[in-house]
Length: 155
Image (cartoon, rainbow, N blue to C red; front, side, top):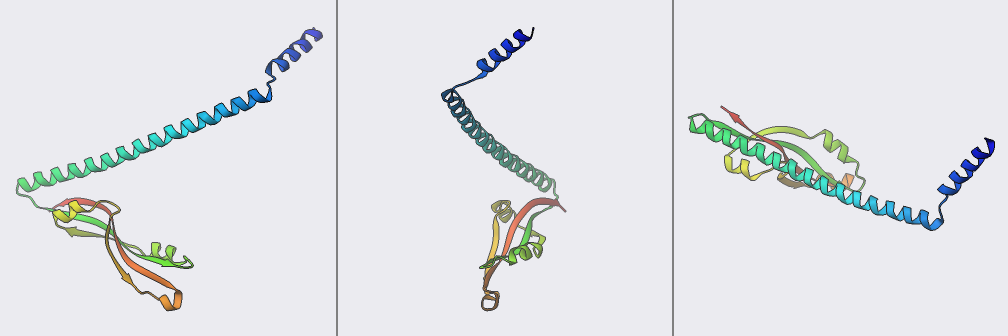
């Protein structure tokens, strides 16, 4: 009995033993599979982003159709851009960026239909340079208004 257990253990160990070339071949195979999987993941991420963009476009089209139906039936709508006013600072020490983020102000702005259709989410609506305290702090900054969303209200 003991001899058969030892024999079985020796066969098991010898059967599992691989040469360095076999191990390297397996490593190369796994690296190839990893590269292929990364490529597939990138493709899926691209498809996800495309679908998200199409969903946003579909949502905008539905809102536009709803607005047209309302105006067709004698109602009124207002086109609203959701905006964020912030300071875009480029300084050497990069200290003010957190402060700029915390001091940002969100607000809604009523615009005409043409302006509403022109801007998309994350578009820059307005940028105006200001000297800031270039001499004292070494920073130059811009006032920046960015579109963070848009919607149509019925009146």
